[in-house]
Length: 77
Image 1 (cartoon, rainbow, N blue to C red):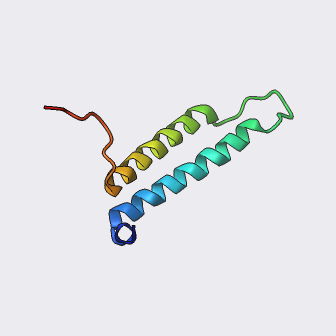
Image 2 (cartoon, rainbow, N blue to C red):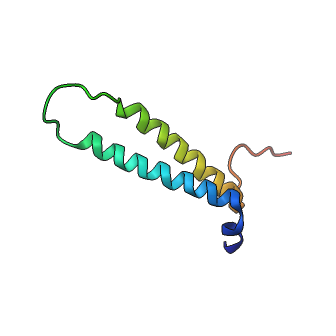
């Protein structure tokens, strides 16, 4: 595990994952707040939430692959 943190690609992927996780948390919190008025928001939060969640899942799969866990389709001969 120590070797992974010396790998720059892993550190960048970990940063992207943490950034996406924080963005999903903040946007999820913004969506769950009670509304004070019925005016629509200027920024649609649901598509942004889904995009950041997808980026986070991709970063998590990439980190798992760098750790040595094989993800995806395995061909058996």
